[in-house]
Length: 180
Image (cartoon, rainbow, N blue to C red; front, side):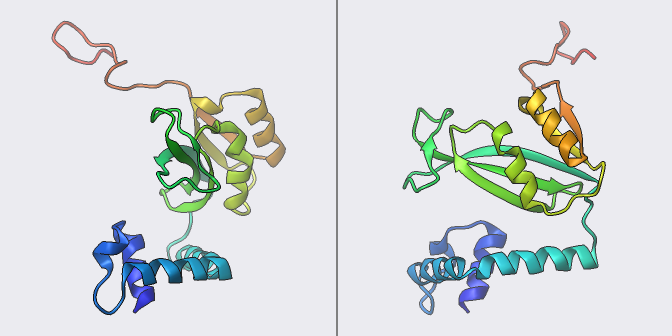
């Protein structure tokens, strides 16, 4: 019962309180989650899930993408730091690597004020063994000699997006149409 409810939390991304009922409280769900994490059960479950996916569907490891995102951490925690995008409130950065189809391969958690590029090596390590000459897609924050050398040393090819095209930066003509 507890395991099923924790899977629901992961799949639906909802709060523990929404999944809890009279048979299993939100506190019980959190307590069991923490115990299973401490015991290493969640890492084993993640490994089993990725291996099963790879065997049944197949991971596309010839191309991977790495990027980071910042989320709030209102209760702090050992990994939390001042968020540069949320008025200095506590936050964390998740540096994630995904395969060509967007399947998460691994994640590294760091304080929100850490730059993405120093997390690249550790993030790639979470993906396991990547094929020789695999393409690693990165945003322009990673555009540095350090990144180039790191990827070269690992036998990987960096594909860095140098253009940032957002609605505010796209050039428009007098009628508001995008200029190409």
